[in-house]
Each structure stands twice: as C-alpha cells, then as structure tokens.
Image (cartoon, rainbow, N blue to C red; front, side):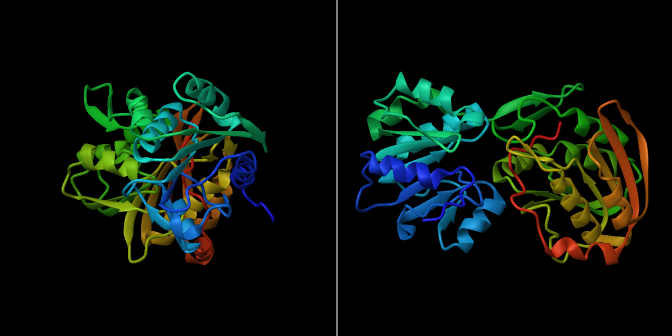
Length: 360
C-alpha cells in the first residue's frame, strides 16, 4: 500500500492494528481534525465521520466520499484524534472524543506539534497503550466510555476574551489564529484603514473579526462587509464580535474567489504558515483571490511580515501598489486596479487554507 499521508497517520494506524488494537465491527468511527492530504485508508469509509472546522479539509474528505461534519454527530464506536499544534485545542478534542466514544480513542500527532507531552499527560489519566513512533510522529490509544470522558472535563475549552487597548472585549477560542491576543500586524492595518472606504468589501481570512469590527466602526460608507474564513470556529466568534447588520459571514477557503462577489475593496492579513511550515504561497493566493473579486476600480489594503516577497504578485495583479509606513517587522500595502489577465490563476486554489493560522 502506498502512503501519501504527510503525517503519516495511516501507517501508524496500521501498525497499531498490527500491535493489537481492535476496532469494533460496527458503529461510527469519528476522526477529529484530519488535514487534507492525509490518508484514512485503514478505516472502513462507510463508517467514518470526519469532524473538522476547516473548510478546505472538509471539502477534500467530502470529495473522497467521507461523511463530514463541523461538530460531532452522535456517538462513536471508536475515535481518532489528530493532534493540532495548539495544546489547549488538542486537549479539548481528546476530552470530546472520550466523552462521545464507547470504544478505543486513538491519539496521533507529530512530535513537532507536542505529541510527546500530550501522551505523557494521558498516561496519568487513563490506561494508555504502548506508544508507537513512526514518521516523526507518535500514536497510542486508550479505552473510552463515560468513565473516561469524565476524566477530561477540565480539558474542555470555553470561549475566551481579549481586551483591546480601548477596553473593548472580543471573544475567541483556542486553536484559532491570534486566540490569546491581538495580532500586531492586524492592529497596524486596523489603524491604517481609511474612514472613507465605501461600498461592498471583504475581509479575507477574517478570523474572529478584529479587522472587520474596526472597518465597520470607522467607515460609515461601507454598505456590506463579507467576512470570509476557512475556520468555522473563528467565524462563530466573529458572529459574536461583529454584530453590525452590514456584516455577512462565509465559511470558505479565502484562497479561492467566492462566485458572484463584486467588491469595491478588500482588507486582509493573510496567513503564511501551514502548521510549522512556511507557505508564502498562501498569501500569494490571497492576493490573487482578492484581485479576482474586485471591481476594475477596486482597492486592496494588506499587511504582511516584512520578509515575505509579495511585491511581484501585487505588481502582476494590480495596476499600481504602494508600500505605506509600517513597523520594523511588518509592511503595509495599498493596491488599486486589478489586472484580470493576471488573475486567471485563481481557478487553481492552494490547499489547505488553515492550517494553523500563524501570521506573525
């Protein structure tokens, strides 16, 4: 069997099965937060329920014929937790899986994402199997049920609050971008956004709505602002934070233009990491998607880490662009006039689009 899984979770799962793990013969198998490109071939496809808040991952597994949901539906006979980078998020997924699963709960993660630490913590709470190491990752399992679920109630996460320098509170959740504080780059762009922007706009990669909140509070001439993000959890927080009736929310991959949107402006602080790996092409895809959705007279307001080479893409996609005063670590851009001949590449999206949404 060929394993294209970048984790590779499929191989570790097969080795666990060879080592004595037994999956129940019936019942749904919950797979929590797998990423596009990872293989689930050792599992019976008709029994798998993929649970993911990430739009590109949801689309990728749905295209393979898997049942996909944003939140768990019902109980499971077995579960697999694909550990994310966020420790709090990983704990929450384990607690959720243990509470909803009657059979084995399998924990799988990369060493670079803290799998060792999480497995050590588990040993003090449950009867954890021997740990299997393969492909720069580790996997183990424990029997679940109601008793096991009760052992993890302190691992469940609740919405948190971030207070800005003016005392305004924003809701966020562990695992979403900038969950523990306001991102410096976003704050820089928020200060630079002009009050004179008008018409229909979009916040690409809106997250929990910080930029959108500032945009709508400042610019009375904005008629509609579309908040587009690939993480449904971030958008849930954005709906709490941005209550302005001009806001519209879209759970979608921001690297792919939304059909039928004709925008007067776009604001964005695009991500450039997928997990721990730098992916500057994500920001490039954001720029192309913005240009593809903008009207001929439309404009882009963008912030980026200073080392990222976005200038060639801006020059290829817009008639003009200028760099505005920024900070030592961040640069601001204002671009105008999308060039349609250079945005045809928008039909080839970059996946996945979240990723751990680290920008700074």
